[in-house]
Length: 312
Image 1 (cartoon, rainbow, N blue to C red):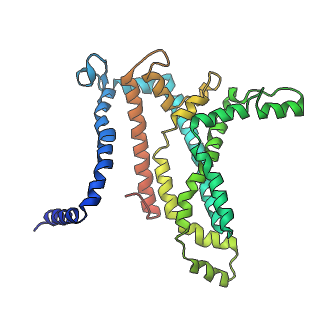
Image 2: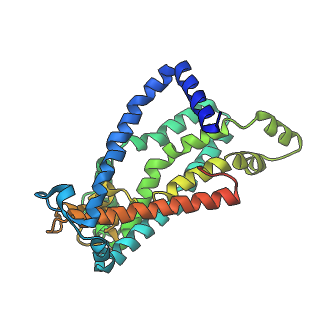
Image 3: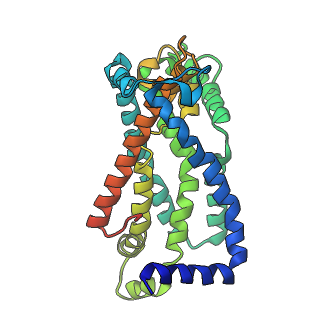
């Protein structure tokens, strides 16, 4: 019997033995097919001049015209630069924070303090983006917010509006995200650290290693595979800056640095800029997805060769 035949017979035996488990898989499988794979048929709009009357299949084919239009647009360089700079800054600033926090929590022996601390730092994750941006507007308002009131008391004059400054946009976006997400992101590292054998720490203590040395030579190496996987996944979304938060923080004064690909696609696709062009917006979104795919495949290949840890 061929290898494929042996594999099919083994699969048949497994399905018959564990049919209840495979039955549970039908729901998420159907969800993925309906909401992830079926909509892929709409990607062809990027290569057509779509009209609602003709529909997806009946619209005229234009090939790469929509992509060429985007590459030649004056917006191309700006939105690409803004997206990359904001994403890279966010990775550099926020990626180490969950790791540092997890290592700190793992070094604390007081279990009650650890539970309380983890709960407090995880809670911001459950604040919606709309509420978070509203909180920032209230706290840093130059007239009625805490920031404005403090500056008025100290200097006697109202400060400048921070949300009207281009240089403030990235700081607000990145560090508010760091505050909101580092506690939640640390959960996976705390779980990885829980698998470290206590005998390693006991042996290191007998050899006279300090707590910092044990963190550096035992705890940190043990979570490097987890760090690698998380970094690969993060690199796969470099071009996918969150739409809601950026859009809510945008205004006419900071638009030069806050216009990213996701907000530009929304404005083009839904006519927020005065013109509705579904084909053009789909082409931009497809370009964005292709760049993300290239990045995650490339980083995964490099990680597999350098550290022997990869997604596949």
